[in-house]
Length: 231
Image (tube, rainbow, N blue to C red):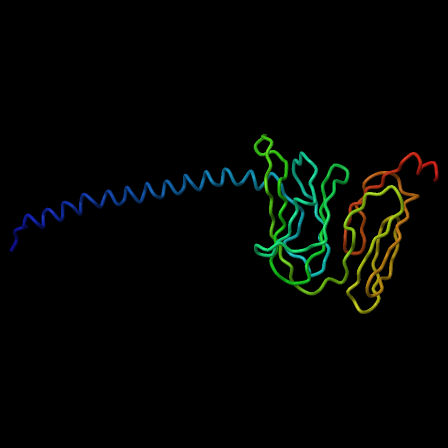
């Protein structure tokens, strides 16, 4: 009864032989996973970090999103390269993109339906690790909460003459907002559409960040020789 048969010995030998191989295979598999993960992150991180925006993670329904697109942008961004999607479906959004001074800005009127959305900027010319590249950038954001008190359009201005800002109030009663462009003043918004006249005759040429109620909008004033002579 104390003897070990040849079959038992062979089984034990096979077990002892296979056990180290199992550990070796597991080690190799784990090592390969780390190698692939490291390579993936090495490729992904520069692409993700070369371009960014000042978009917020969350907006109210009907709010106006105004954000700077940051990074080394080599060519003008076309509105045709910008898409907003809910899941995988493109949605209609009132938006625009423009270079103001040496920075690029985008504004968009947020959907009124709470959900998760994604901004896509395709064919974006930039640099990755010092090399000129075209990338497709995307950033996800959420629309949630109560309907925004008011929205503003457009979300930025480039002008050489007086212009109008349109503020749409979603409230059912008048509300007062403060603004600091072209001067400090309070404006009472009526329910619905409000057209605010902006006079720039006393404003010097340059780029301004104007506070209009809860929004900060970039404004570029261009003064031509003809306009200056009229003043």
